[in-house]
Length: 316
Image 1: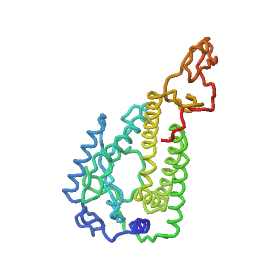
Image 2: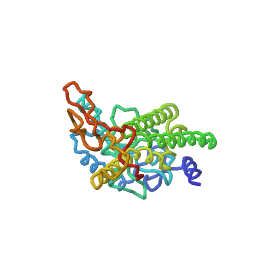
Image 3: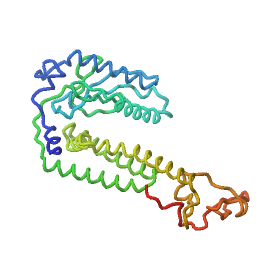
C-alpha cells in the first residue's frame, strides 16, 4: 500500500500548493506567501551561520515539488543556498564540499524544522552548477527564475515499479555485502553505489527533467526510507565496530587467559591493542610468544603461536 501511495504522489496537481503560494492558479506569476518567504529566509540565515565559514551568498532558492505542480504529502521545502564556489581556494574546494555536505546532514537531522508539516531541507549549491528543476524561485528577489509549467504527464506505473524494484533489490544486496566487510571496504562499496545513483538521477534530469523515471525512482527511494538507509549505513557501521571493540577490550581486561586453545589475533582485530616489539620469544606475552623478524632494524614483532585461532569465540 505504501508503494502505491508513493507512486500516486508523483501525479501532477492542477495548481501549486495553496498553503505556500498566493494566487496558485495563476500560471504566469504566482507569488510565495510573505510569511512563508520570511520564515524560509530566517531558516536560511540560521543555516549559513551554522556553516561557520566565510561565504558570500548570492541567492536563496526554493525548488523541488513545492515549487512545482507535483507536490504531495511527501514533499519538503528544498532550500538551496547559492554561492560561487570560485571564492574558495581551489586546492581546498573538495574539503569545502565535504564540509557543506556534513553540515547539511547535521542541520537537517538536528533541527527537524517543519512548515505546514513539510520538512525544510538545506543544501549549499554552486551557482555555476547546472540545475534541471523546472520550478526555481528566488527568495531574495521574490520572483521566479524558472516558472513551473503545467504539462500533461502519465506515469507508466508498471515500468516505474520495475525500475524501483531493481534499485531497492540492488541497495538491499549491496548493504548485505557491505555488512560483512570491514569499515574501509564497506565505505568504498557504499560510496560507489551512491555515485551510481547520483549519476543515474542526473542522467534522467538532464534528458527529461523532474518527471523523468530516473528522478521518480530517486524520489521513491527517498520517500520510502531507502536513501536514509543507504546514507545511514556508514554511521551505524562505525557505531557497531566501536561497540564491538569496547566489548572485546573489556573481555580481554577482565579475564584474558581464561580461554583455552584460542589466541589473540592482531590480523583479525587489528584495531585493538598495540603490537609488541621483541628481539626474542621471551619478550612476547603468553598470547603471542613467537618473535617474528620481518623488520630491517633487527627488531621483531610478536606473533601468534597458532595464527588461525582468535582470543575468544563469544558471539556479541
